[in-house]
Length: 310
Image (tube, rainbow, N blue to C red):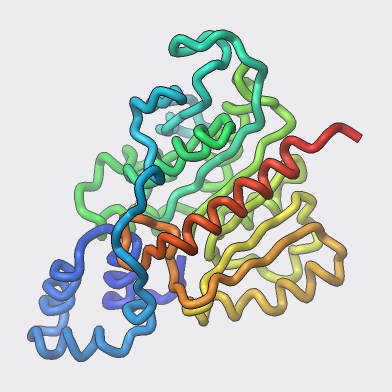
């Protein structure tokens, strides 16, 4: 998540993440500034709005909850201080669940949402990971506040996320990891994390904090301080956008440190796209780059979570 707390930038950030359309964005900025002319002028110079790609989602990207090759459902499990709501999905033929025939346990992936909670788009991404062969879970980091369903408005969802602390998010993500570890469907020692924007920052934080994390894939997430990168044990694939320049530029010292520490990592910057280019419900979605980035992420997760034992 960007650290800019300017209300116009926050609205633009929600817009590119798919919270509402451009007409609604202009309406909301007009309310802030008092006139539509002022709103158009304020929005015209923003780099985020100059990086928009194709709006149409190509066929086959989304995975419906009743897709015949997976099992997907909303679940609830115990966290350290409150129940945690989540979406859970896995390939069909596993453990006898949902008509499965008892296939072998598979590696797990924690899918971490942006700064609005567990919205339908992230549930869909969770199901995409299941279609790719992983036992996937997407926790709602607003669970302590009643879950995303308690906040009808995107701005309310973001405000609720901003009330969470690093320690709370880490605790709930560790509880999510524990849920996967004790699932008979999942290989307990082969679990990674993948997240977008604020979720990407949380992936970085988990990689720093959890030595047992099997792989980390942050999409355009704020990186951690250089001083803590030495703690990272998991292979990291960092995926960023060329036109998300302020955030992508912050990776320069991170890459230098990762190289110096001989960490296992990959770094991809997708040309000509902006922040949230993978989100097919948002204004910056770029189908070609998104599909390439997702394929790269799944290949990286397969490489490290399915590697033969040494």
